[in-house]
Image 1: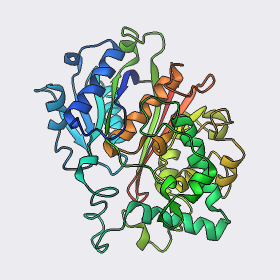
Image 2 (image 1 turned 90 degrees about the vertical axis):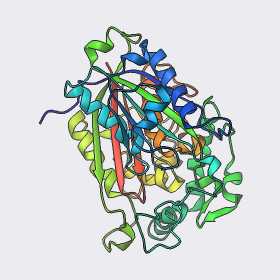
Image 3 (image 1 turned 135 degrees about the vertical axis):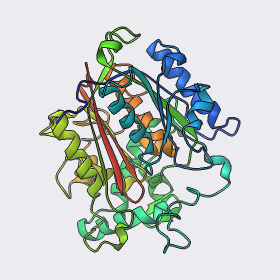
Length: 389
């Protein structure tokens, strides 16, 4: 079956800093990211033929006008994409398929979220519409805390195992100029932090942030004529899987991993020709909305065997200089999670790493990068694999 492998190129990427942007609105943020991406690609905004924008919250924006009003690119197709926390990478997926189909030559995938001026604690109104019996709705920390407590009971994992993820990612994020939090932390700091939803403490949870990211998508033959003609990256695969938004009511759901991740990864590996991800993937940017999520991601993505996630981190295999660096950017732990923007930021991180110009930590001579974007209560997952041309 025809796919997108090697038929789609990433010509330019851009992103704002992810932080509390009280002085900017969503249009300011999105335009900043798009301007950086177009400059990086060596094109003008007018060269863009279609746009997909990831937005989760209605107060950030409705419809494709979110991108059109920010860029002033009127009269071309512009589509809002919403798929829980995987909205940004799903926007990228749509852009890739449009280019691979030959419908457009140069398109924009982007994402934005403006959350911090809503005045709420945590994510506003999360899951209220999708799980009506939860009134008030369960918080995101509460949902993922069930996975952590399950792993504690079944696998003997501890809060120290969670803290190692936070310490690793904050060490990486301290070196990234666009991260929300740029300070290293100690194991003691992580373990003694205030509790959010047991056993997840403050440093086990990613922050609420504002931000935007953008990716210029085109065909390889066009990328060869643009600014990164010698080092553009190519998309090897994208997998997308959707499961139930109510896993807590499924008696077969064991909270020891996320089926959507395993399904999306299987799709992506099949298309990219990956048979041994632990050896073939050079590095990964994964969805560490909570420290427990990253540990389970290692297993679901095939980086280690089931039950070995905590050891994978403790042994240093996920460190920046380890066997398979995970979240060398600092991940969501350091950046926070402006939901619509995160997936496109991850694609940008892959691209810059593969080109040898990463912001912050640079992975040694990478060939293939993987980005993993998980949404809702683990219900939606997108996995993208990008390689050097």
